Length: 309
Figure 1 (cartoon, rainbow, N blue to C red):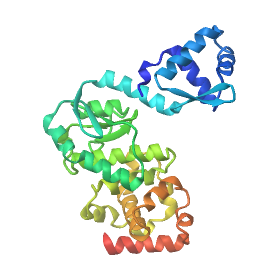
Figure 2 (figure 1 turned 180 degrees about the horizontal axis):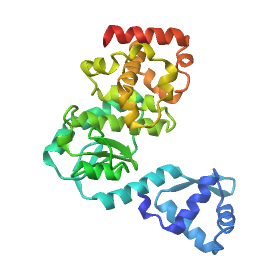
Figure 3 (figure 1 turned 180 degrees about the vertical axis):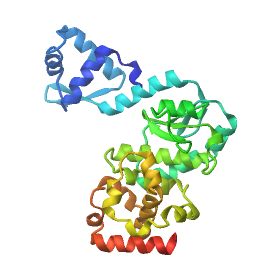
Figure 4 (figure 1 turned 90 degrees about the vertical axis):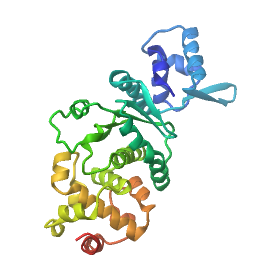
């Protein structure tokens, strides 16, 4: 897929097909001309171009072809945003692995450190979550952390904010900023976030972060112990669900540690493939696993005391 190859006129055909499951050429012409007043031959030409570019296809229904889009609108928008992002922040490809493409700063040491584990991490995470991406993952490396923060729209962000998933791409601060976490694990954290977003874009924030931290394995027992001290007794499932997209508040409230240990507990009790079940159906975990919520919470706290405190 390369949405930058689609003209503004061809996008009008795509819009019509996104609003309708299957349409004949005649129906497409009728819908397009509610706004555009184009000639029949012109619209048919655009349809043929989109077929050639493999953005649409058709099925036969009696005597007619019924056309449909091969990609969702969201997929096309994300792909176009990636094109724009690469053109602004650096479109030169510095390194390609089996599953990743690295753009931006050509820091050889950084690239080699990421290359060493990127593909094996991809295979492990996608196998567990039962999801395979259609294309290579684009990663942009920044020369300065200030530039990374600027792109993320958070110029005053704390120094620990070093990697993110946005615009359909993975973004990373320079290697020197990964002092308490390895850069490859930070990459796997934001890559896992991207996978979760593709599976269920409405997955709660605490599951996004907890599952990503768990699969990236960047939280060690010492850090978890320090983060959870004096907070364990106040943990409940409602407070987990109430975590919102606020990085500073999430971090200062031991959000990573609480979410991580909850995921560790779920995997220990219900198995590794329970992660995908929670992503698919995240809003009532107790019901999902057929267990009383109070019992689930009690066992979760026992798990924390036994394994992390």
